[in-house]
Figure: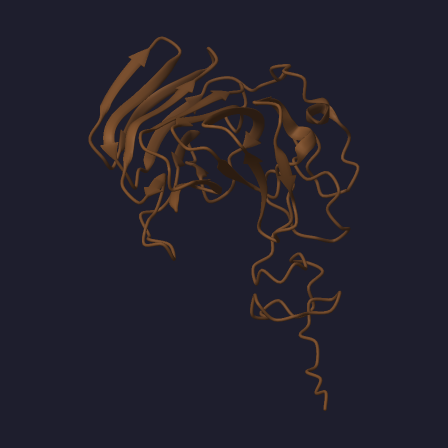
Length: 267
């Protein structure tokens, strides 16, 4: 099975796949934290599976092509789209999380797509297996109030710079990470309107995040990240802040308070 992996995103393709062309475009909004994401992949494969973070729900998908797909949200750590096609494209809204984005005291933003730390597959960043990406493209398009200061990748490729964006293009590559520095010169009083009704919604779940809350139904008392999604350090399914046993192993069955259930014996 061939695998394509991105930070928080995962592609799975059938063994019939030959060439793989991948494209990622981020359209930043004026606040420098939210963006519209275009993801597309085209290959000779007959099927594809695309994994998204749990913070992305089916109603958040602004565009899906082809329109015939299966949606699966039963996995505890991600949601899945399945396509019976040799390629697909998606558009949906996202927000940089705390592990991706940091800000210096003078207002400079630093985005890191992923650490160079191999996962259980032995890969990191944007990766594909077996083999490499045949053609890989990545780009940012930014509004006038955002100034891109520097950009680099850990692999060789061609960077292009335009008035309102940057692009990266590479061939036969794998395990790709990006580091981009930029500055937001003015506050975003009016976000770009692209059809997401949630971005100006009140703070209905009381987590302190109103505009741009990607998880508008977090439980009361749960600790959340800058996108309004619950943090769960021990990955037991019970959010930090309301988890009374915050260090339970991730695979252990727990009760509603996050504490390990007692073992039972049947005979």
